[in-house]
Image (cartoon, rainbow, N blue to C red; front, side, top):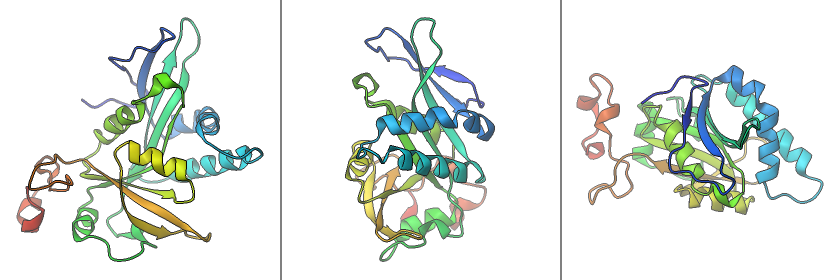
Length: 234
């Protein structure tokens, strides 16, 4: 089921100790701009930073959000918790955009990119997740998976991709705990150091396709099945 921007869906099975309720809601680019400060606050609360670096981290997050909001196909999902008569509080967010077919997203990748990923890029079946932010409270465990599932379910993607600063060990570990797989590193566009490149397979796993990267017939475009490489078919 698809949900329009701003339309909320109650998160079933969520039973926070506070007795409140949680809703997932999609935001369009204008709504994302309106809530940018709330999400930046969440980012600072959820990040492990050395004292005095909170402001820099906040600015980096806001710059990343501003860049993504302007990209074609930008999409965002937030999780909001409500307690009694209080206003909803943002406790999680995820956003990203479809990967362009020209391969520019992979610039700086070290080594040779796997052929199956090259094919998925060329066919427009990749979605880049730029950010996942979850409040570190115990009651919000599992929320990242719910947000991933909801956002990516809105798009015809076979594989989600992301890049994380490899020096941010806590963040890299968090993505791996959410099901992401490390496939290599990429150089940063302007700074020294590297980014870890991670993928999240969205296809069904089977003995023949243990990584879940077999082509998903449900996302085929007209005439695409005949053009698919035999090795990519399920």
